[in-house]
Length: 431
Image (cartoon, rainbow, N blue to C red; front, side, top):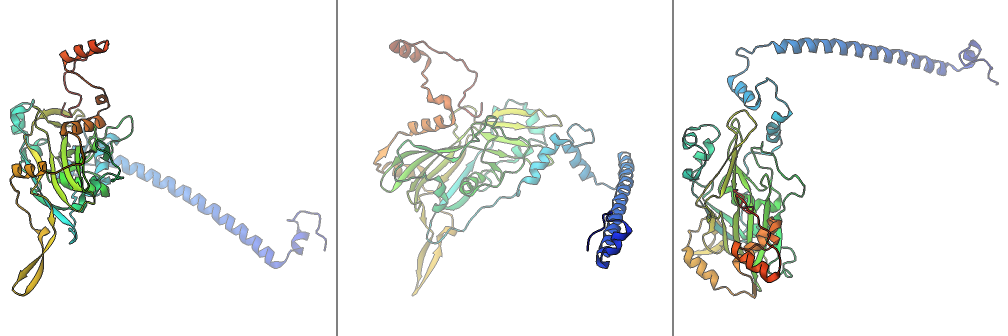
C-alpha cells in the first residue's frame, strides 16, 4: 500500500495507521504534557522555598538564643570566631577542618610481642622546661592559665617505661643490607619535597602514622601523647647513617626532627619543638636482637626548645625558646627472649617474660660492654653525626673553618675568604 503524500498528521494517513501505533502516539503526547507540568511545578516550588529560606535567614540574623544554645557551645564558637564578626570564615575554619580530618585523638599502637621475638625494655626520662631560660615575662608564664597551661602541667613522661619487640625496629634497617657501606645515609621519614614545605600551625592531633612510622611514633609518645613526626618547617623527618658493621650487627646513628602539640580545644595550639633528637641503635641484621638503644635531646647548648602559641584572637603567634635538661629514652639492657621455661616440681610452664619490665642496669657498665664489640668496618661517632647534619642541611656540604684557621687555609690555597656573620646558628632548630 502506498503512503499518501500528505503529512503524517492528516486524516488519511491517520486512518491508515494501526490502532496500537495511534495509542502509542497518544501516550507520548500525554507524557510530554505531564513532564512540562512537573517541570513548571518544580520551578514554582523552588521559587517559593527560596523566598521562604531568605525570610528564615533574615529571621536568623535577628534571632537571639536565650536559653536555647548552651554557654559551652557559645564559648566554643567564639574561640574559633577569631575576629568576633559572628561568621567563621575559611581561614578560621581551618583548625576545625584538621580536627574533622584527623582519624582519632588517642593513638595506641601497642602490639603483642610474639613468642619467637626478643623484647627490649625502654625507659623515658623527662625534666620540665627551665623557666629561668625563657624570654617571656616570668609572671606571665606563672599566671597564664590558658595557652601555657599544658606546658606548665607537663612534668613527667607520658609513658615512663615500655616494652618493644626487636622486630618492631625492622623499619630502622636499610635496604640492601648486605651491600651497604659505612657512612651511607637513608631516610626513615623523608622531608617534604616542595618549595614551600611549611605545614599548618592550626592542628591539634597528629595524622595516622604509616606502618613503617609506628615504632618511632610510639617512642616519641613515651614523652607526650601527641607527637608529630614531620615538623611544620625544615629541617623535617628522620634520617639514619651506618656508623659501623660486622658479620652480624649494624651500629646505626639517627637524627629526628619532630615536634609535639600540647594543647586541646578550646585552647589554641601550642607547639613544642625540640632542636633535634639524636639516637643510636645496635641491631642484628635480621632484627632478631638489639644490643643497645638510646634516643635523646642534646643539651650541650644553652637553648634547645622552640615554642610557638596563641594567647588571644589575633593571628600572630607568640614565640619563645627555652631549655630542657633531659629528654631521653634508654634501654634497660640488651634484648631478651620473650618467653622462658619455668620448672616447678615435675611441671614445666612457659612464662611470658615480655609482659614484665626489666630494671635498668648500670649505664656506665652498659656502655663499657659496647666498647668491647669488634667491628669489621667503622667510622668515628663525630663523623657519623656530621653525615647526618649534611643530609638535613645542604650548606653543610661545604667545609667551614674557625675564624683564624680560615685565613691560614685561604693563604695555602691562594683563595679569598668568604666571611659571614650570623646572629644564630643555621644548623640549630631552636634558633
